[in-house]
Image: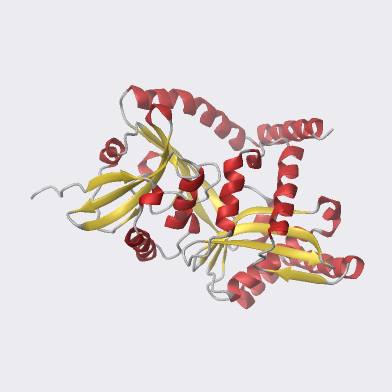
Amino acid sequence: MSTPRLPRIHVVHPDDLTPGDVELWGELSTATADAVNPFMSAQFTRAMGQVRPDTRVAVLHRRRERLGYFPYQRSRWGHGRAVGLGVSDCQGAVLHPDAQLDPLHLMRACSLNAWEFNHLESGQDLFLPYATGQFASPVVDLTHGFARYEEHLRTHSRRFVKTARAQERRMSRQLGPLRFVHDERDPEALRTLLTWKSAHYRRTGRRDPFAQPWITELVDRLAHTTSPHCSGILSVLYAADRPVAAHFGLRSQTVFSCWFPSYDRSLATYSPGRVLYLRMIEAAAASGIRLFDFGRGDAAYKNSFKTGDLLVHEGALRTTGPGGILHWLRSEPTRAAHRLVRDHPSLKRAAVRTLRAVGAVRSR
């Protein structure tokens, strides 16, 4: 029995993808997954290519047939990472179901000695053997519509929803009539959200991603992206025309992926974020979304809203040469320390207290 021939691979910048490539990328995504995350789209990778010059796409083909696409970023020493690592919430390759691929062959073709990921979606069988950890990504299943979801909330999060609805009424009485815009196009509203979010990162002692100009530019580019496979959606809750909470995320035809939520901290007692999410989920269901993905991470509000969890994975595919060893030496001690903190509640609580103390010092 003959061994299947490995596909040929050539590497391009995302700007060099042809319209046919972009169209096929979308078709392959839809054909190989029930719910296609917008972070897995050609549009997200192309936006990344416009703000990060190290972004590349490996194009797989056999004779004249395209078999798939593998987006990645390549840094010095041949160390690779998932495209948008640090901001992307879904990662992997988009491949034809019949594609036969050796992961080390892929690494050689991309001139990589390592490829790191932290939000690898389930179903990425090529890379899953190299995962070293898995995490829950809370989701809301909207397959049967918002009315069915409301029934779920009344059964599983009755007190949470009752409090949110009471806060909604109180906000309306004390601050003015509420107005929700699901797809806001006012650039000033986006600037307000990013200002709130930056202040939140600093206040909690975490690194502010918007201090990196490329991330701000990426959000701005995606805010103007309107493709069926990836569209930027800015949702804003107003009280008497004053923005009180906002969220910027991405959607495909069937998946809404949460990304950057925040609110006016001076109104925290009204819990405007809860109200915003309820409105967003209802609007998402009305627009055809079947899966509302909160993204990886522990948060009480996610557990109150969710109907279930997806699994995402972190890890790294490495070659056996010196470059792969160097990547292991640079990344694994840090990764192991993070796992230790995550897996021990007392250490995790201490880390949170430390970050808050750092944030308090920064904000003085």
